[in-house]
Structure formats: structure tokens, C-alpha cells
Length: 572
Image 1 (cartoon, rainbow, N blue to C red):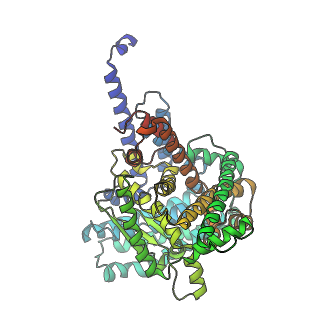
Image 2: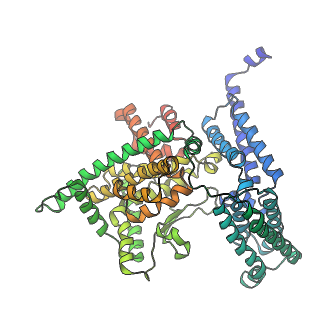
Image 3: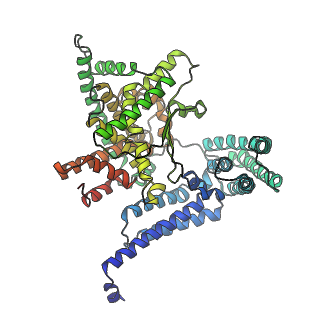
């Protein structure tokens, strides 16, 4: 057997291992779509609209066993497509962690309630379905809502009090919707006729929802546990290792983040001093470092939009200017067809409207429009509150952040990477790549001369660098060293010089997404080190456009993989 194996040509072995790798990826994606049809649908896989989550104990155990078997298969040393398999391994480990270590199905009421809440809207909003299909699917979803409600009652054991409170409030709203508004909404507002079993299916769904609500109000409330805002050092370290796929410790992260804070504070001082000498040539410099920075930042914040309309017009001009700059300086290959729209965030978005967001097109959407929702504030609020708000989103800040959010940051990177031939990279992107890339591109364009005549734009970039390092540093301090919200606010404003608007919103992000907060600093640092390494390796042969294009075309993979990619490719 061994001698026969040795006679197989090497090219055949490579082909076989590649097929094995592809088959494993395809199998995993198919199983993932079956287990998470709502997630698959939100990623643009329209066929998943015909399915819904099954969170029964049996199905969760089946999914867990499947992931454990895939992890075992990945440990075999017969792989050729190492990048995709590494991403798959990270994904599989995350799934095992959620369903085995964290046991979400026994400890999280919101898992079920949030799924139930989103059961009908994807069907009602599916403009690719005809009305008779919607009618049939609505009836199916009502049955599936009853099943997932029953699964929640059977699976849940002990939940945290904050999760319980949120779950009960949302569940109560869902029950009211189903009992009072659903039937009327379907017929009068959406003109969707009811299927033959609609009345019975709705009654079954309502009954199961009410039983779950009663279970939550009684048994779960009597057996709830205290909410744990902080992870603790060991749990934080475990999650950091999973998130970064590395051996980085919280202590190491804290150390390098604090070093960055100290370095950038020094750069801020130098830029502030240079700016003040230029802007006020006949005035003496403020005496202290802090006074110099405060004066420069004050000038930066005074150059602010007047209102949402002014802000929107400014951003459209910025977008055009960034495209022109990238093209003229040969920094990266721009997408041939722009699919971007810029709007003001609606007030209905709640707190998110205060910071804005990019609604990226789903990776498999046939209509890949990306929407940039700009921060907004109601004009009915006191005038000073509006002035303070727009000061945080001043023009120098936006001249820098347009790079991060649009060109060649999030919008451009996601648009290009969605064309990749690797679905694993689209469905399970590596955590620190996306924010790391957008952060890294800020410095690339500034180094190329973007806004070189305006030192306040560089000042805004340095302030953002401080914010990124501060996010990582305070994330560690809160979860590993027990920092309070007041400590975070004081350090963020006084040491890291964050604008009040951003400092105040930090606590919620630290407690809700502590790992994601590290990605700006860690990813940006890794890309910066990669650029430095490639420039040193290639010297005069280094091609920035080739460097940038290769990263975006490769998709969101672990950043350390690019060293091998560049070593085996050439810009010529």
C-alpha cells in the first residue's frame, strides 16, 4: 500500500488535497446554511428564505458534533489550501465555543427571542417573492415560531437578569403584535392574502409565545443569575486567543496599546505646535503641552458642519475628492462601477444615528448597494447641544474618516473582496482584517499627500489613532483589571484625548463587544508592519498599487498570511 502511494505523481496528490479541502469547505457552508438560514438570507443567499432556524436540543447537538468532526478533519496534515482552512478552523472553534463552552441555547433567552422577532420581516420584505409565495411562507413561519418557542422553553435553564429583562420586553411586544396587528397588517397594509391554515397557525404561534413568556416571567425569573458585565482575565484571554487566532495575551495587548498611546500623544504635540506656529505666527505658543493640543483641537472642532444638510453635501464632495486622489496618485485600482449612496441616518435608528454606520451590501446580494448613513442629530434639540455634536464630526475629522469608511477603506475593500472565488472568506471573514484595513488606509493616503496642506486633518488622524489604541487598552483594563465606567471616561478624555461624544459611548462597546474593539488597533498595526516589511524586502521594486490591490482581492484573511502571499508573487 505504501509503495503504491509513493508512485502517485505529486501533481495528482496536490489535486486530491485541493479537492479534499474544497469539498470540506463546501460541505461546511451547506451545513451552516441549514443551521443558520436567517444569517444566510441576510448574507444575500435568497434560497434560505424557505427555511428557518431549528434550535431544538437534538439539532443543536447535531450541529455541535458536526463542528467537532470538522475540527478533527482539519487537524489532519493533508491540506493544501491553508488560508481557507485556517479561516474554517477559526469559524469551527467559534461555533464549538458558543454551543459547548458558553452553551447559548441553555443560557440566552435573547437567542430565541431575536430569532422569533426577525421571523416574518425577511419574508414580507422579499421583493423577489410573489404574493402567493409570501402567503404560504408566512403560514410556515408561524408554525416555526411555535416550534422555536417550544425549544426555548425546553432548553433554557438559567439566564442572566439583563438578558431576561430584554427578552421579556421583546417577547411581550411580539405577542401583542401577533394578537392585535398581524392579521390586519398582512391584508390591509401589505395586500397579502392569508393561507387556508392562517388562523390555526397564528393561534398555535400565539399560544406557544404566551407559554414561553409565562415561563420567562416565572421559572426563569425565579432562577435568574446576576448579569456579568466583566469577563475576567482568564475568560478575556481565552476569547482574545480565539478572536486573533494567536497567542497574544491581555497583558501584551495592554502593553503595546499603552505604548501606542504614549507615542501618538507625542506626535499630537509636535503637530499641534507646528500648526499653531503657522496659524498664529504673531502669537506666543501656549506654555504647556496640554494647552497647545487643546488649542489645536479647539480650532479643529470649530471647523464643523452647520447641520445635517451641510454635512451631507460635504461628504458627497469628499467622496469625489478621495476617488480622484487615489486615481491620480496610483494608490489602488478603483472599482469600475460605483454602488454607493450617502444619506443622513434616520432618527428611527435611535442611538446609532448619533455615530452613523456603513450598511454594506451582503456578500451574496444580487443588488450590492452600500449605504453610508451619516451621523445626525434632531434640529429640535437645544442649539448648544447641536453645536457640540457637530464639533465631534468636524471637517478635518471627516477628511480623514472618508478614507476609513469609503476609499480605499470599508466600502472599496468590501466591494472588491465580494468578487473573491473563496466563499469561506465572504461568510467567515477574519475578525481584525476589516477594521484593521480601514484604519491602515488612513495613514497610506495621508503619507501619499492627502490633505497635506491641512495639518488639522493629520491631527484628526492622530486623534483617531489614539482612540483606536484607547479602545484596546480600556477593553483590557475593564475586563481584566475591573476598571469602572468613570475610570474609562477619565482616562479616555484626559490621557487619550477623545472627544466627549466618543468617550461617552465607549463603555457600552467595551461591555458588549470587547474583542471587536481591539481590531482597529491590532489590525492597523499588523498591516503597517506588513507594509514596512514589503518596502524593506523589495526596496525600489515595491509597488504600492500592487500591494493594496493584492490585499483587497485576497479578501478578509489573517493578516500574517500575506507575508507568504507576497513572497510568492511579484508586482511585475
